[in-house]
Length: 128
Picture 1 (cartoon, rainbow, N blue to C red):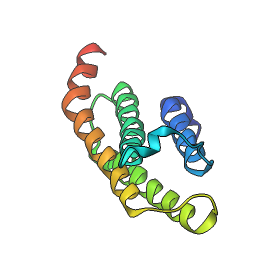
Picture 2 (picture 1 turned 90 degrees about the vertical axis):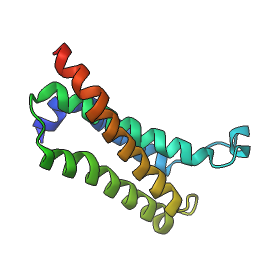
Picture 3 (picture 1 turned 120 degrees about the vertical axis):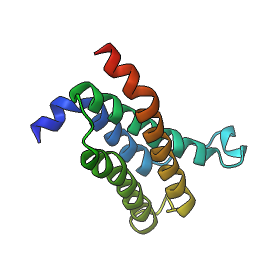
């Protein structure tokens, strides 16, 4: 477990922040009037998490182990988002689970995977 804290510290901090943001009661703002702004936020949260996962992975590895990428960089964040949506629906009174939020989270993970492989990988491996 200490390995992950050493190799992926920023990713683990972002996971903790996502858990916090998923369960606290957000303040009311004028942003709520923008249609589907929460979906954009979900795409950015999970896309940001997975971009950071890619950066930390590529800095620590010279080759891509697709088994690790698929399980830890794609399936784990999507499963985490699904669990959070279920916990919001069944374990809180102030939040509600939403399948469209889950879809937005999954889109964020997918976009980050494309960015990681096609943009970050060549750049980071050239630099390091």
